[in-house]
Every structure is written in structure tokens, then in C-alpha cells.
Image 1 (cartoon, rainbow, N blue to C red):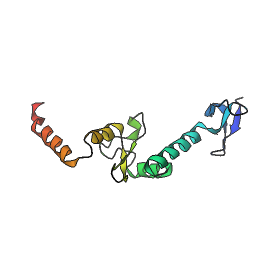
Image 2: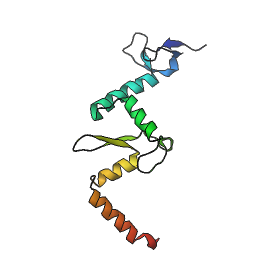
Image 3: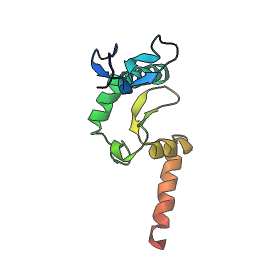
Image 4: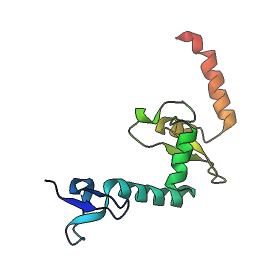
Length: 129
């Protein structure tokens, strides 16, 4: 029978394989399961960087039907969690984007005119394929 312990995050008894090792703890295992630890870490990161909680992130993801706000690919198609897209001037959160879309608009420096010129460029050379 597998060893089990109570997670202090979700208050559920889970197999010890669901907990991370930690030499600082008396029994060498953390007090939160891996899932609760992830949520705690992600919540802190989102609060610090964007002023939103992990719960708010999940509400946004649900509102976007688990899809990138630009390319509409499903989150399950990516290894990484969606990025929180935000205005670098105001800090206002706009939506959740896959890594490709987030870095692409970042490379265009959120410049609508530059993006429109890129679209026109692609239109001109569309028939060359």
C-alpha cells in the first residue's frame, strides 16, 4: 500500500508521490501536493506581474473557450500555459495568448500601423505561393 498524506492546500489525502520532496520538512516531503503548489506559485506570479489571481486567469481562459484570443488554437495544443497579454503602457490585461501570438505582437511592439503594413505586405505576395 502506498504512503499517503494530507495536503494542507486542498485538504485531501493523496499518495506521497503527489508531493514534492523537501529536505527542509521533517519527513522530507512538502505539505502541499504538486497541484496545490503549482496553483500557489502561479497565483503569486500572476498577482505580482499582472494584478490578477489564478482564479481570474481561469475565468478568462473559460471566457475564451480555452483558445488563444488571436489564433484560436486550443490550449491543449501547447506545452506552455497561455501568456497574459497586457498593455505595456497602462498594464491593463487584454487577454490570454499562446506563446507564438504573444511574442509576435510583442515583436511588432503593439504597433497597429506596423501590423497593418505587415498584413498589406502579405496580401501583395499572397499569390506568389
